[in-house]
Amino acid sequence: MSMVLFARQRAGRLLARIAAVALGAGLVLNVFVAASHAHSGASSSVAMAASRDNIVAVATAEIGKSEANGGCLKYGSCRTLEWCAMFTNWVWRTAGVSPAPSTLVARAVGAWGVSNGLFKARPSGTRGGDPQPGDIVVYGTPAGATGGHVAIVAQVLADGRLVTIDGNSTGEAVVRNTIDPLTARAGGSNLLISGYVNPPNLTTTPPAPRDRSVSDLTGDGFADVLAYRANGELLQYDNNMLINEGGRPYTGGRLIGEGWSAFKHVLAADVTGDGFAEAIAVNPEGTMYQYDNNILVNPDAKPYTAQREIGRGWQGFKKLMAADVSGDGSADILGISAENELWYYPNNRGSNPGGVPFTGGVKIGEGWDRFDKVLLGDVTGDRYADVLGVEPDGRMFLFPNYIGVSPARPFGENKVIGEGWQGFQTLIAADVSGDGSADVLGVDGEGQMRYYPNNSGSNPGGLPFTGGQVIGTGWQGLTIASSSS
Image 1 (tube, rainbow, N blue to C red):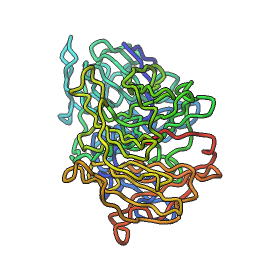
Image 2: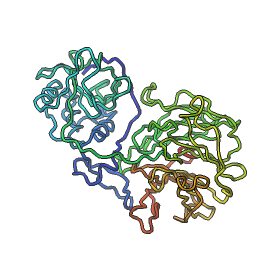
Image 3: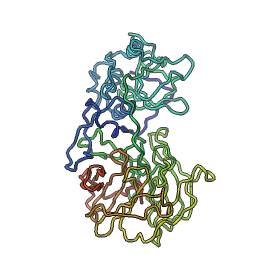
Image 4: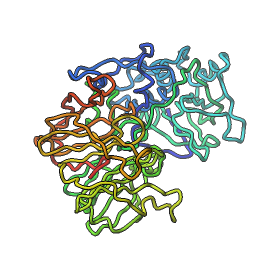
């Protein structure tokens, strides 16, 4: 099925923000995830509730499936029939939508929507029709005739354009497109959009709390990994734990930049508060740069293609960390100075001249040289980033964030929450599971990555990290940016 589109944009894979909403829902789709309530490494089934988030999640997880690689065969007879409607029907059914259309004719999907009172017409000459994520967009007036096209609406942009996930699109594959609904045409008859079919009987579930410490490059609520090699190549590892075998989140990286070994510190955290992690980089001279995350609009869905200087004088810090310390939805910075003092730089981009986020810091602690590793992330799940410190003997300490009651010393209290952490070369705190609380990733000397889910709600004594599992190898040649450096 050919497509003529106003604009076409391939974006990086987004995964579902479904960890919180899936629990307890009726079983519709079995996907394997790393068990967040056990430490055996066994996989478990996660069920989906019918929601707009889950429709988009299912659709985006299919990007790249094609006739050539056979990934489309689960939708139906995709190698012998046009299959855009097969795809949208399958997505809705898989996401728990009931009833869902069964017709294989694209325009007939619109007719199904009309007969069920679910069709929202696009007024001629407008971008209207109230498209929403999870809707099916219909090209061609609703009818039993051929020549049309259907796709899943993934996002409605501020300027009225739509991000859609299309089956049987470019290359007979599932792809992501950015379109102008006023002018976009598709299908064998090159038809305009007639309207949208609203998914019935959806479950409304409050969104899970956001952990702003995560290196969430794709904006789906699951921590991705940003890493660079000694040769300066920057790699993005998307978190696909909901669809990867055995629930392993990271199975392959893609090259998204070069020249990053020139920096002393590289952080990945949501500085702008839009749900997508920016990259913060500091060179040896102490100049700090911000790379805004424009993954949805940049060519080839590369998040970081432009930088701007946002500060100088950072060369005195031996460690920098970025996470939402203040609880306002935007990442702040903690730094450990050469004198082992802990400094806090709140994110005041909304009031600072030029929107520069970090313009002044305050000392909030001393004596941080007692720790070999210091991590920053929302371990307690209250939307305020906590501090984890690991001593040379392997003991891990949790410093809960009490900034609301003790702004001068938010990390004044601590307790031991584990032992045996001395064998890791790298430790990262990030919300890998998407449940709103930071988990821990560790890379040992052999390059094995281990995942420690945060099970503070079920573990004895409320200890968050009591068991880990190997989720990858070959990480010894990479420097992981994440939220700390």
